[in-house]
Image (cartoon, rainbow, N blue to C red; front, side):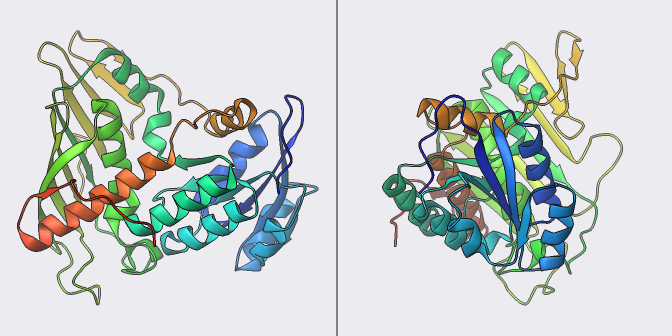
Length: 332
């Protein structure tokens, strides 16, 4: 089990999943005071070796058990294929490690609940990487606008369907890759839980190309929140343009409005002000929660919520009916 962490103790950190997302985790760990980079793990050992060579003193392995059993490791980052998150996260927590988990928390709400059960049993801390929350521009808009109405979209150029993110099992397609970011952000900035979602879409840009009728490439959804506010969300790889960026959000509070664009790096307000504040560092929030025994910036309950929403969006598309959130997911 990870040691109790006094204020000045270095926290040993390791990464499972040495790909593009993992590289960003590694950079964050290297730049975070009080964190020591200890090890890298990937089923493709060459990837773990490459990472360890860039971080002198860190070891490499293709066996996650070495990470779980290492008493010098306090925090584990998981940045693997989406369908592996649940089992790896539970093993990390069962080993008594703190967890910095890539989105989505898991591919199903029931798997998210399994992770949450392990988290509560372990007494450790877990934070989810919903990256828009760490945008300085997004945080500034949240400080100034309490939206009654909002619109968000992620419109992408036609995708390379050979990547694992578009695999029906490994990645789940764009709802699980980018959709979870958007729905988490909308809940966060509306400061409310959803009570109903309606959606249309399905396989609009790639009909019959996935070997599964469940994968969604296009969604146009409307969310109604418990506080009475509403949001729309559009997602597809039908193409992008130069008028608005891939990520684009608008927020309206009845008097003022704001736009978040340029990959959530720029905030524009209805008073004419345009601001590009830098993003904030991510891993320090988890370190702070460990040090202070406090709730992390992005909690397990919010990870569960995001996965539930994308499940409800897919269900609404498949059934043609609005979906409510009265049901409570059960851990299995």
